[in-house]
Image (tube, rainbow, N blue to C red; front, side):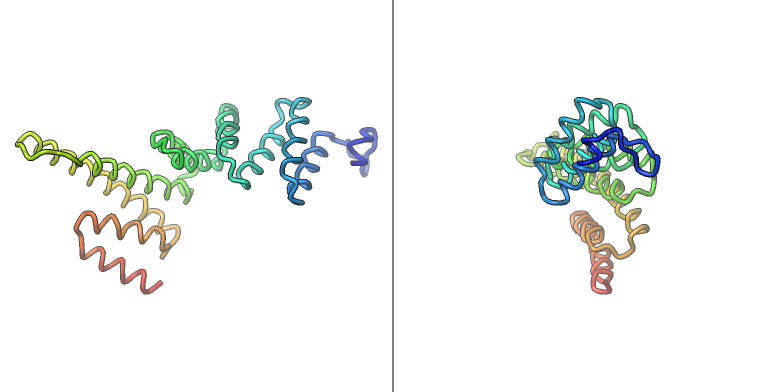
Length: 213
């Protein structure tokens, strides 16, 4: 507060940077549990420094911590117009889009994340989950399908598409397991996929890995 109220002061001959001071103050407020005060301060400071990345990044951090997905997503969509190489932004976007049911946008965000970092575990797992969701959509589309010849042809095509999505999900979860060997979430996801495919041998193999873990 002393530095903020006395902009002419210097520390060890360094320039007293008010933008840095105010962002730091918001960080302290947030750490003390004063989330609303921290965000209110950042909103005020942003009017003075409208293009400030540190301010936007601090706001994003707080929105993420308090699970304010709507505010985080709005800010991320703005940030990624200019900052296109931060993998974290796209991973967070992928998660939020997925939670909101925007599958295609989730897929695009995770794909962009992998273009930046092809070993990003969260993006890889997210794409595995995306293809499971896609396969579930095909399952749901089979509800109410009749028994006529044309219906059965359509059903066969749907099942084929479902299994293609299963295979893509398997690919990504196996990639994830290469980075995180023995991860139970990925193994359980694979177990459900192989069970849906009717591959009991693979289900049994995964059960053994789960017991070993």
